[in-house]
Image (cartoon, rainbow, N blue to C red; front, top):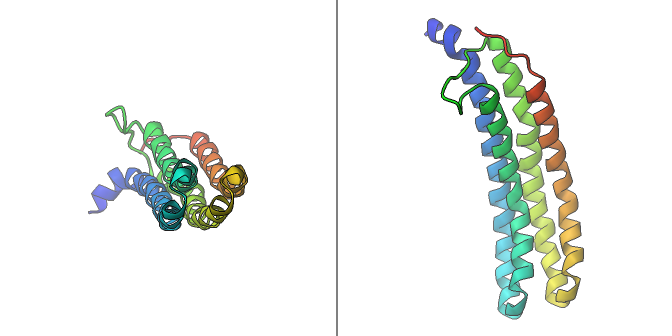
Length: 166
C-alpha cells in the first residue's frame, strides 16, 4: 500500500481534485436546473408561447456543470491523462492540483444552486410580461459571474503548477 501511494499518490490526489470539480459543479447545476424547471413548468402551462424564454432561464444554471468539467479537463490535460501518458507526480504536486480544483468546484456548487433560484424568480417576470425576459436573464447571469471567476482562478492555479515528477 505504501508503495502504491509513493508511486501513484500524487496522481490520485490530482484526479480526486478533478473529480471534486466535476461533482460539485454538477450538483450545483442539477439543483439549479431542477428548481428553474419546476417553476418553468408552471409558467409554460399559462404561457406556452413563452417556452423559448423559459428554456433560456432554465439552461443558465446548467453552465456551472460545464465549468466544473472544464476545470477537471485542464487538470487532466496538464497531467497527460488525455494523451494516454500520465505523468507521475509527487504528493506535493498532487495536493497543489487538488486545491487548484476547489475554487471552481465550490463556486459552481453555490452559484448553480442560487442561480436556479434567481432564474425561477425571473420566470415571474416572464409570466407577467414575456417582453421583459431580458431583465430576468440579466438578473440570473449576475449570479453566474462568480462561477466564472472561480473557473478563472482554478485555471490560473492549474497552469501555474510546476510538474515535479515522482
